[in-house]
Image (cartoon, rainbow, N blue to C red; front, side, top):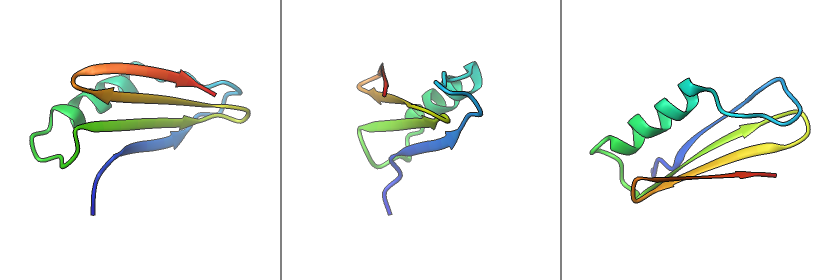
Length: 64
């Protein structure tokens, strides 16, 4: 099994990550036990989703 990240929903049309969401994915990325060089955070809203990719310590966000 390979851990590639986290996903959850927010009860808003166009979700944005909370500071807790961002801190959680940063902590997971710094976890030395992970087995990939990237992590994803996907937040599904009622209309769109928000995706965060963290790779090489850089955080990139996409809204769909």
